[in-house]
Image (cartoon, rainbow, N blue to C red; front, side, top):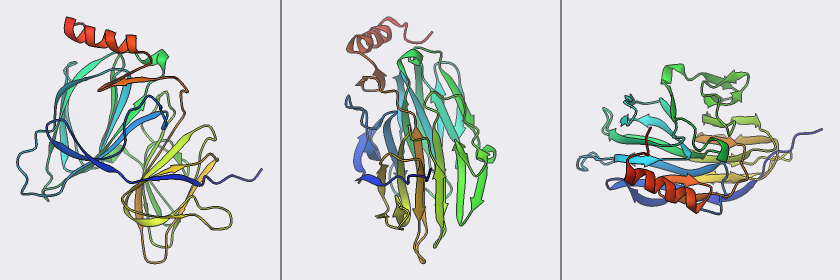
Length: 288
């Protein structure tokens, strides 16, 4: 049976929002009860590109329950520490995949790189009901540990999933995700088989290209900065023009098809579970 290329369903222009201690972000989508991006809950692009800005406070200590947070750095770094005693730095090309499970308190403090810039992404992934109260854990992977596959003018950093036989180091995630940093040369093409059951998006943050390429060569011309939501299918195809490269984050995952109840840094399945999380915070029993 011939593969069905995923067409473009929706194009989203990120909106600027302020989070944490006055951190300006580009947000493509955030947690909502409609759960339109299942299993994904939020995607933010944070960048501080004016070296004359004042000190960056970042994200002081805050709680999470019921989700996974994925931080991927392009430039600068983020220092983090949490209620379990973990302390570390995520630098350019590094990724931190944090499973909050039943609860964690952590802080994230961005720092500029040598050029004076900070640039990176944060993705939130929903945990299915059966895993929302699981023990918290981390998968931290340095840039050197993320494999790179080069094929047909595509340079792909594979964080999770499989491209051209190269498997990413982040594993044992409920959503069975694909998470890749894809750079396409001018005049190149990228093709990736995907599970028909997966939800797939791409965040185009550099250049331009044609996304959702069909067998007849047609597709949607997308210029950065945009989020592309794909329709159903079993492969993603992207190509670039003769003079214009592009770069994008490709994300895919298996939906849980569960009702969710988001409330700030918590995403549970019912209002009562949110109330319990708030009670645990007040009683000092949130972290065990």
